[in-house]
Image (cartoon, rainbow, N blue to C red):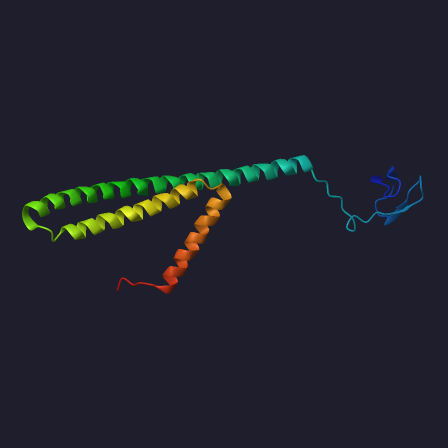
Length: 164
């Protein structure tokens, strides 16, 4: 005994004999092919599928958020290090100014002044750029990082250096 549904009238049928290739609907007379290898039914649980997709999207979003937090923490650490370097450079500049006034005179002052100014300018550029990136939405944040990475990669290909 085999159960099937008529494709024409949707009636539930019980068909005797498992080795038959076809049968006729007892209600509408439609010929029904019984070969299992020719037709299959695929049942999709749409709600479960949407739930799984939503969970996958949530996991991907959380992974990106985590990655963003790691990058921002690294930037904060770099910023603290840069601020410490600038503070040290300022102390060196102050010491040099005092030393220049007392012992050497004016020879070392331009060097430390230029070094301090260059470090300060570089720090301000980095800080401004990082503040800009912090304000971007998640997708633009990673697009901008990828573009910067590609530009640095191209610069490395153009101007490779060797430790030899």
